[in-house]
Length: 309
Image (cartoon, rainbow, N blue to C red; front, side, top):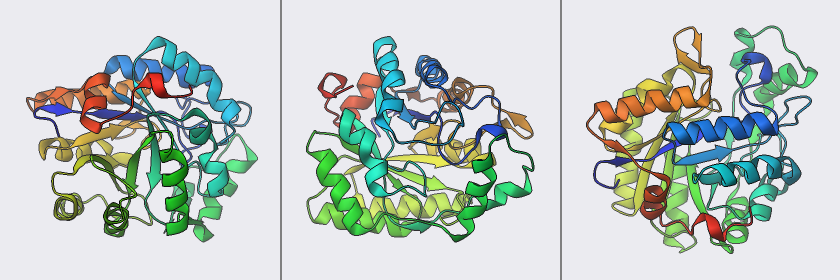
């Protein structure tokens, strides 16, 4: 981490939560664009983006659904745009990589291994859904593996890396850190590595403070000064987890993709609200929030003018 500078990333809308779970989850291109711009204005240097079908709210990797909000966000703020290659667990790797391949963003997310991705516990909390696909998707995760084999990862690195896109390496467990180390040793990824350690998803590592410390110790041992560490906590553990990470010298990620909540029993009313909460934590520790251009320098990004957005 650059001395005293913390990169805040914001994940605007993802595949984990469904529209029925919160009225504040952005679904249409207009909602995603406005929510992204507000998050950037609140202090997010990096905006992590998925798209949704505007009629059903279902996650969708059609590049044509990304195009309307990408152009608006780029026109109205200077945030680093980070496109998912995770999409949703039930998508193929070809489907998941389409937007990043087309728009050649500064950053694309990359899950560093195959894993169980258990969303079904949400069915214990939510009983009524607006759309038929929602409950089916959650129930289906009992027997679903998110597939990112070594061949898949190598292909994503090669195809997207050709345009200068760098990666947010999403590591859900210690094995994912070792997978990343494997690709570093082979020269298929180059430092500085942007390592996003993910806590609290069923199928990955938990969100206990010891889990956070274990992932940090492992990453330090594997990567030394060759990486930038960032942390996201899923669900109710979002803010406690990022507070711990910021205090340990890490960067942080918030957003409605990762958690719908602002506090116990209180839904976050926007992505910007969570960014402001994260900023308050960071600045309360005597640190400052990195601007978009500072994040570009820290992560050695190519710049927004070299994308196809």
